Image (cartoon, rainbow, N blue to C red; front, side, top):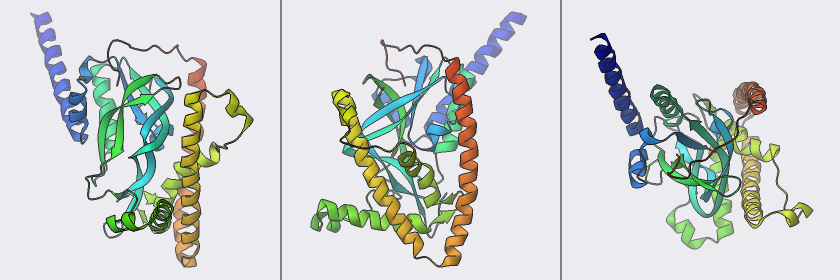
Length: 316
């Protein structure tokens, strides 16, 4: 009798956790639909992957069992969504998203979660939802194919800009500008409009410029890319194509960085001082967290187990 009670309780707890998982998945705009379209049931997977391309790369919401480079084709990273975290209801800031671009490539991190117990799986998605779903709807979540370093495609849950959202900015251009301006002129106007917002906006989570500096700006300074080097002779076709696309991304980021600095420089001195005070505090916290993460990553690499792949069904 006691054993039957234990079994019944265990079954009840399992059903409760499944119900909680379903409710959490419903919180992610578009994710349930994307999973169904790809015939993926999270309950049946031993390995789940999340594609990180911003702050999540360096500060995962939940400790992954493995972390490796990933490449998302057909998209680009850009500050293309309005944000209340780095702005106000009257003057929203801009935040990072990945947006469709047939010539684009996003290099990020594949966060792998392998062998999670049901309760751990629920907790992992709960933390992801709390971290990545803002109060203002700007994202949708999709199951997309992301390439590993060797070109092997795997499925990963990816947060992308929702082009149907009223808070989607995209390139910040209207239809008339796209019709009348050349591609270079469109880019110039887009950068000018975005940089003005990012140089001035701030909110409860800090400034738009600070988040830009700690994501795209940080990547450019830490990992600058130069084309036309001798090493390119030894690169495979896929890696040479990746390098060119990532170089193009960096050139855009550099132009946007310079424009933001120019817009910031013409603000009143008292406003510059106020914004910089916020950014210094944010940067100090960022450096401290980054130092802690690097130390933990170094320790993890010393005991890292060999990576295994599932070939019989998609991993997420």
